[in-house]
Image (tube, rainbow, N blue to C red; front, side, top):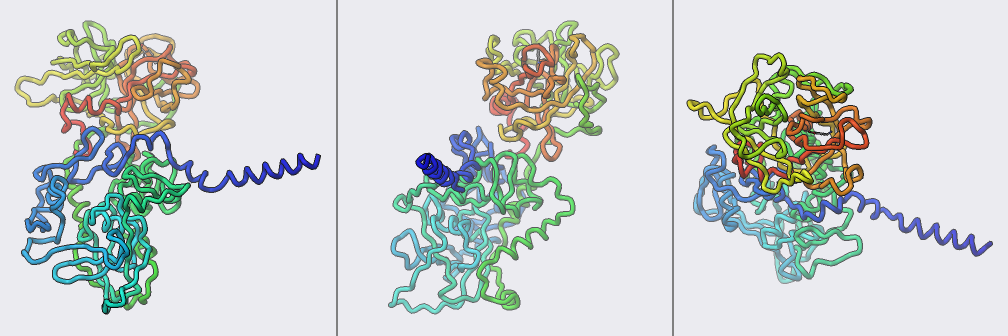
Length: 601
Ligand code: 4AZ
């Protein structure tokens, strides 16, 4: 009996040890996502910089002429003056030796350099910068892993910094009198401290920043460490905290939740809390800039700025006297240039909004409610729907169309009722049909096709009435299971009768759909949606039509194409849709990127 008690106690202690907090923290990371090895260059997770564009999931260098033309002169370390910061950065992106030096025209005098002083190895030391003709040490004040990463990356250490708190001693034979230092404030993805805001402060030798940069030897492996995509190890507790500890942001891109002090983007990314409601979109899902009414950007930032000042020796009064900002804030230039980039307009309707009311079997649509919905007519029958995505392009299901029957199809836009055809309806002929090369009729895999409508001979583009394009999703992280979306179509309703009217219903994205359709559901290519009781569903005749989801800013994306399903309106068999985000590259290859790239162009 006693032995049993001891055993139980032993088991209890053992279990409480297992429940240590690191295990709970590990739960913040999404293992499946980590396998994708996302970094700050992955446009499935983050927006590219204004000097980059998104191609096949990666941010790659733009050419300088693809930047805005605004004239806000900046000077590079190679002595060349550029029209603006974007043009310089896109040049740097191609030739990394070209780095930002100062704003304004080059005078041929100034230069920038950064060295590590008085460390035991090449990869550590106090941070000394040469700016113009003066050299200064960087201050400990505000020196965080963000600034330390910038310094180490500049010195060529690809993993950035491993320690930003280490202090060093001046050798006995060096006689230096420190009277001031430069406080650096970076955003995190700068390539030189010259791009960060530098403020001159009074200081002594105790106030200087030190750094240990990441090298292969410094890559200690401790038990709870997280391996960044660049190979660096960081403590597990520094993942999903909004701070780019890795230097390549890989510690912030696969999160199921975020630690305090950071904001959770629905796309699974943690960003610093101060980026919320700052007037710039940071989450690809748009959620950092919603519900911002009453939140003054500058106020939030000022608050953060004043609270993030650590270890201040000086009184407020003294700080103000000593403030001397040595350069301009390039982050402001970056934001401004970003705002000048062309954006296509999609996913917004001109008038009505959808009332989110649940109606059995869906509701009859009103004019302008689904301006991207089209009907495909073959001969006398409307047998499928389609989605207008811009230009002369309509997206539909591959099983709806045949390549060699293009001449038989008509695209009806603005149609609400095809017994009593409403005014505002327009009929377009079809130029060509493009069916996905890997479409398989037996399994419905890759059930996606494009229809190019014919232009009027005297027009350069397709002019459609009461029609607006839906946006094409470029990332599989824009929406997730549980999100509410809308399905619409002219198909049959639950009693399998044809009602000849455009109807719509609200459905939820359903994860783990293999449990409904074992062996028939292909997760990468398909998406399920429905309601708990199955009462709202797509049905025969709706095929090829849209499942649209609205992001936090009410922009509609064509998330799915009605594809198949066992029966209609049965909760045990949800509707299956072609997952459009998986085909972004295929679509942009055929229609041209400029039509569908809402961001990252
Ligand atoms: C069809 O036959 C069809 N409930 C479309 C969607 C669904 C079922 C059948 C989904 O076109």
